[in-house]
Length: 138
Image 1: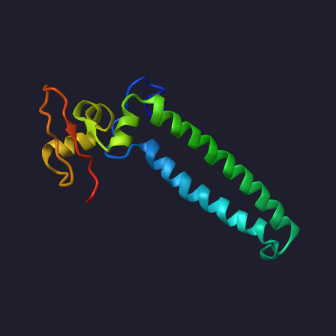
Image 2: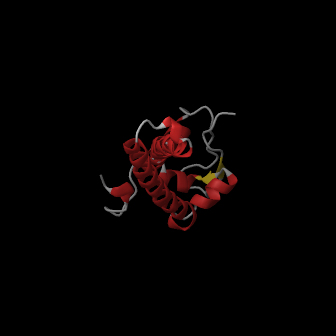
């Protein structure tokens, strides 16, 4: 409700994935599904039983593609210049303890308490930030 913290001026508490990342995932899955199904109907009109089905496919295909594209551009902006340190974390797969604590505080607490077996925190509270491994299996 606070726009990912942008409307209130502070980061929203989050785990490994924040609300925006979850919304982006589901938008990609559901919007992409609509684009694929409507695109198949448009490519193979024999699948459409009526002109209305083709018209509806055009509308759904266009609207879904525009929404996914607009959110993708926002996602690219946020991942490159919108959030300091986000691009480095994506490019290297690592982030420092201060960044994790500021942007994904529930995940950070799980790491320092030992609840997350796939990650380790090398930095102590108040010490110089160290690189830490992300919480991904493997």
